[in-house]
Amino acid sequence: MLTDRLRRLNRYREIASSFVKYGFGYVLDEVGLFHVLSLKDRITADVKNGNTKEAGYRIRCMLEELGPAFIKLGQLLSIRSDMLPEEIVKELEMLQDQVPPVPVDEIKKKLHQEFGRPVDEVFTYFNEDYVAAASIGQVHEAALSTGESVMVKVQRPGIKQTVHTALKF
Image (cartoon, rainbow, N blue to C red; front, side, top):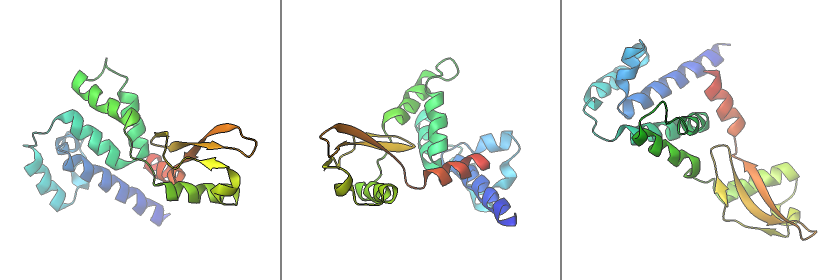
């Protein structure tokens, strides 16, 4: 139980530090959470108040850094032009299709774990270049022994735990 509380507290601090890093420390102050920051982060927040980078860019970078659950939030917000300024929506739209891919070796390892045998034994063809990469998984072209072409969607390694931790805070 104590370990779970410490993990949540560490996640709170990680999120708060990310807000400061990207120039949004004032949000924490406004909602009364500035106290969760370390002294170093409080000082950094004061310095960052002059951050001149575009807000949309900073929001997108912060969501990417915070992980898949936050990327999903950004993707959701990107379709809400009725709620957010156009500049921010355009930046958040980049979360729809510009997610860094998982290295193919990790994908193959995950598939090996799932199928209990190497990728080249499961598929007669497996394209190592991804077709699409998203916050939760990525897609590769492949062919079955029957000759049928398929698209293989693979969850990012560790994604269940990452999302669970992010949503549990």
